[in-house]
Length: 480
Image (cartoon, rainbow, N blue to C red; front, side, top):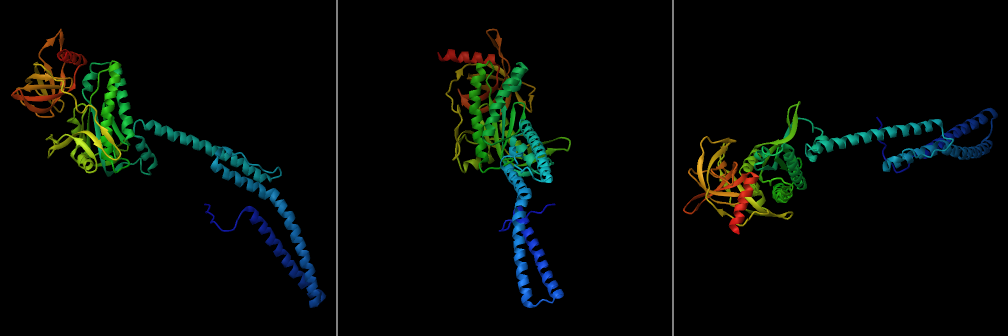
């Protein structure tokens, strides 16, 4: 193992070391010869002090001449044959740190020793090989990052590759803000459309949403069909994770409105998305086994975000109580009054807010279309509906009759009350112009008294495109 050389005030280059070494060794040899000559003359010739003094002076002058001659000749010899080639090699090594493409640029004197020439040749070959291996490894690392960055977040890939224990099972407890989004009625829509067309539509949607999440420095933890699970605060935490999640959600909804204009022109049906956000502690890290693992998050905050999202309708951004309390303390947030719902498996009601705008030092964003004009068409249509619990239909239908309809809602009375945020499947009892309405999926929202009777607002989550055309036609004829 080579120990690092400590820096000193004086230079310790090969030139200084060689010349100083030669000088002191010659001086030592001449001093030994001087002492030996004086002792020998005194011992063999019985010379007196005066004779020995002048003899010493002559010897010293001769030594000085010899030293000067040797230093001049040796200096030129060592400089030309040893020092200059080594200094050229050292200079070339320094240049590599700035530009590794100049590894072969070493100007050696033609009379340099073969050993130094061999060092230069082997050095060049070795450096070329090192650079080649380094470039191949860098290319491989970039390939891994680029490839797996499409399946995982780029930040997660960086965390796994750079962290010493990035590939090991385990995690850490962190407070994060979880965002969950889901398209409304996409599954039923897929059943009536060509699979390739639906995949193309889904990819266009996911590409737009992914870019927005990355823009707000969120981590896409998972994409499950048309649902997205994103995290703000992992792997890296920020002071404004909840604010960034809300701003991201609002921009996602606004972007979907722009995307719908494009997809409708391409012959696709419009899409509706619900978003739920919640803040809390989770375990972040590698989850699974040595055979199969994934980087993900687990915890009650994820479950609550999923529950909140399940109560949203198309175009809504719902945030949990913990997220609202953190953001409301340091930002201007516009939201509807809190809503409470008791859900299965929960010990206390789920509380959430419907957000329409937020203003902070970094973000000022408004949910477009959050306030729509009242375009209800008064019409009475009888129907049957079934409540949906855990993706199961109730065995018996509930009878009802519409009081009004618009493009997004059905206002109706039912023979039995339907609790808020309950999903239903609705079927009209009639056909018009040789066209029978297909199944309509909706979510029960508020119930108010209209025309002296309870009227429940059902937000449409999925409707066949042909049915939408007929309703729009009715509304246009009624307004003309």
